[in-house]
Image (cartoon, rainbow, N blue to C red; front, side, top):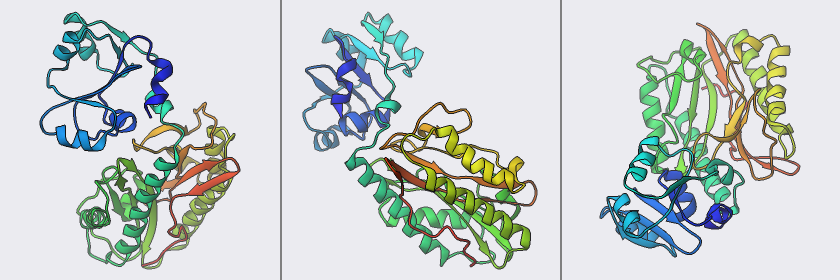
Length: 339
């Protein structure tokens, strides 16, 4: 992916230290830094990662180096920082007499359009999570705690090939489902509860993100209605996703469906976000977004309703934006599942 940096290189070395940047531009998953100029590509790392760096990358010089500033100074390099570099790091280099310049570059934008290889990784991560969801359904039972099921879900994903959870797995039940980002607790599931699981797997650094809300035993009339409204909002919005659609219009589609059914005040977050090497990437599907969806974007569609001190429902798929629609990475049912 280094060719994407060529227009920005000028007469120096781009200095990359963020894990996502090192994976994307070099394929390197260890710790250290990646230096890229028009005619040289270098990885600075330490003894822990020398072997993996040589195995993971091609065309890069692998240099054992802990003090990056010393190497850069000895080689009389001009460093091109990304705007998100820490001010402390920038000042350290400047104080060491290193020529440094801030580069007008946004890695998230360069990574925005996913390649065929990236989409393959995203699909694999989604498949792992899909399979884990179907398996966890056979495990959940009355009396189990949120923590117990969350831990089991992470374990199943690991067995199926996930490198790590995409984020701290959310598994909450009963009244706790009214919290969009509730933290698993010692709450024990009981009959009549909604159980919301928001989770994802990673594969070769790429994330998946999905949410399913299921019921343990029968639900009452209000719960059934709220679930159906969220299901319709998610499904109808996903159907309308395509290249050329303003991201804020996607958010409005979901928001209007929920509002017209009387639950507008209980939809308290945006409809979605980009997914890739980071779990939250550009573009956002929100009321304030200025993005226009493009072919190759990968975004979540995740409306929800959260009624304080009662319950909540969220349903989420991650989709690939195409010229004429959206391809879901998830294949598990969105209809209400009663365990």
